[in-house]
Amino acid sequence: MSKVHMVDVTHKPVVYREAIAEGAIRLRPETIRAIREGRIEKGDVLTTAAIAGILAAKKTWDLIPLCHPLPLTHVDVKCEVSGEDRVVCRAKVVTSAKTGVEMEALTAVSIALLTVWDMTKKLEKDEEGQYPYTRIEYIRVVSKKKGGEA
Image (cartoon, rainbow, N blue to C red; front, side, top):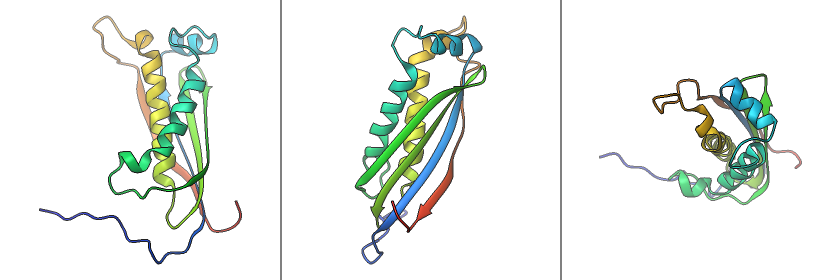
């Protein structure tokens, strides 16, 4: 049996930490048009996804077992249509703490993209009830900072 534990950060200094993550969801062009035109039955997809991402960042320590609970001082999630078949979500997370916020930024993006999927799935299904076109892609950390000013 393997042993797991949280990393001990007791003796690390509290410093400014920032991480930016992004990812995309590929959708049918018809679904993208419906998002742009405000015709999604559940409501405003991009705003709802951004709010879901913010909430997710704040709960990361609750979702990922070995993450430290962090006092997030800023979370900004932006979701926008990109081209004719994608929504891109980008999250910036900031804190002053002993450990970084990459997981919080990645969690924010992941949940924002899942929210887009949830809100658009009715339009994405094919005749068999499958999602052959829909896919979440390229979730990654694009930058991180440690130290300096907020």
